[in-house]
Length: 509
Image (cartoon, rainbow, N blue to C red; front, side, top):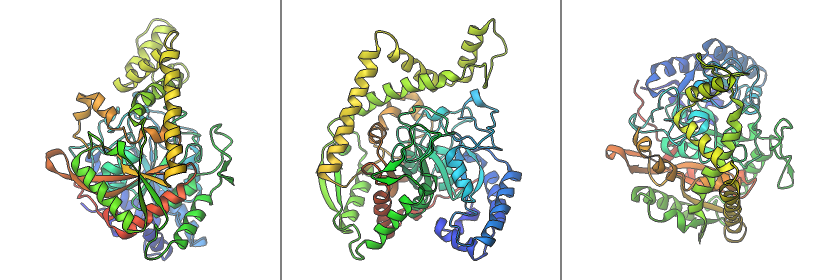
């Protein structure tokens, strides 16, 4: 079925319609709430509040009347269930926080609200962000709009599915090991993970604090430029938020102004002239699906046609990303999730004898299998006698991986280009039968998080997947620290020359 957003290619076009009063934010929000209900089978949304959504829409219409050039005013979006929000539940996909409603907004939510966007509700995610398919959740798996029998990617699968299905124009996400890029690739939309520290993590429920970063989803790279610019900026409430980016103050306006400048200065015939794109041989080794490889190779050919120069590079420690990530991530998860002790907030078991049993039973009953597994791994690698053997070694590997990226991006190329995932979206349940296969599916994304780099995924074609269905393929762009404008301008030039990002799934209720 069609949705109210099918008439608009992206935020830029919708902004013009709202500015010219061809549609109102209130009318659009009302129609989308109906569309969300009609497409409940996707299981993307876990909480809606029509009264609050329409109140925000009316406020946005009033704001538009006085400020017609407000680019994001009235734009309908959804928030991943890891961002705390006033008025909607924030569950982190877990029974542990099943009925939690925050008294404050996360920094990213706050920034988008100040821009007068309209929240349609909260969308599903893997429990506490732990997963690659949006199957590890208390609310059941989210279904991919392209094929309801395959996953949308995780952990931000609800965000990507909502945007791909036309139920929201944009959505927030988080990226700890690829959780914006993987869902973007599987659902055929654009998604970005900024440099670690560029966006405040205040109010974003933590999984692994040194890896987590807020991100955004939309159809167009140019829309992401406005969205990421809005949520970026220094925040003294987050100790990991950076004050300066490559010598400039980390404030809203930096990314967008540099992006627009690069777009204006680009050569008309060959807008990517002078850009060196590095192609890691490790990303095209055994395990990469031939259909995915072909789509990515075609995209690289298009980038060179637009003026870019191809450079073959090496990232020799790529295979070590998986063990390093899962040791570090699990260790940090073990620490972060210790706050859910059934005493101050969260789920509490009904039957127990004493404090210790109450905590043990509450955590065992409320946390899902994947979360318990990672807590146990994390506790083990941090324990006496194993800390040096596992955690310290993983941190040493992290430095080697970071050095690989730094060397490539300073000496060999300006951007790194390759696939997001070895395959297209797998069938629902397939990864749960083989959890190691799920972890291996993150091989091309984990290094970015370990190194704290910015990266994004944009649609670049289709390949055969489950039941021989044609499913979207994502092209990954990785840049140096604080080079979001370069990523976004490169992606925009590619999308100006191709139409993969305009393809839409046939969504049925």
